Image (cartoon, rainbow, N blue to C red; front, side):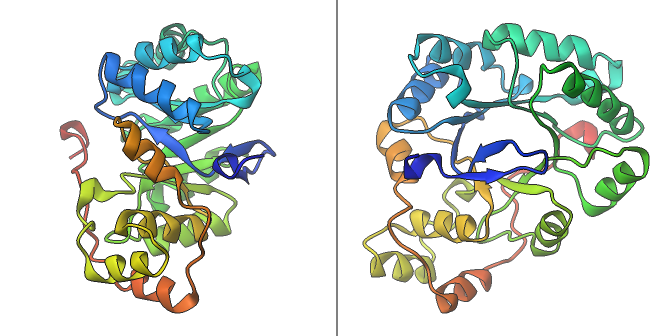
Length: 273
């Protein structure tokens, strides 16, 4: 196992890489080229979603790769519209077709649509039992959503994908998930560059010959939080993976903890507000 493929064991025994590539807003050839580059440089987790409109580009990159399917970890998500229409099975099948896969490793409920997400979860359970999904989970779920879910299902989500970075630590939610066997995966872990010039992170990075961004990613990894930074440029894809040869000490971890200001890079979609 290379450092880039270090994993976290999910609550059903499936191993998920701690580091992956996010492809949000990477369209057409950008998504295909980014995934191909990431795979060449050791990435094995690729995170997409039906609403990103790039599953086909991800699929083309996967089909052109010589990496065995069992070594890859592919995540996609069901969007709000499909939940409201009750078309989860159809949406899932269309995602598989665009990806050119017979199964995905992780399928997530993208948002907890009120009045819908419990029934959506029941459909995900059926997909899981069918063998077309190796693990099921959620995204953007708060503690109240997770507790409601636990009342109607014996299957605990394997993952909760939420926004986490040094400016948005979500410490209470992260602790709740980890205490209940739910792996936390950070989307927008780079905060779209919002902490790039934070002096604390710049100083910590300099101690190890790293950037502020690499210090921020390392902070999350040491909290056993999986990260899926979005990147399309090869230099950024490689830099985001260069986070395994140093370790932050307790004082540095606490200094980054103190940067939290509950800063979000994006608002919930309009149909969730």
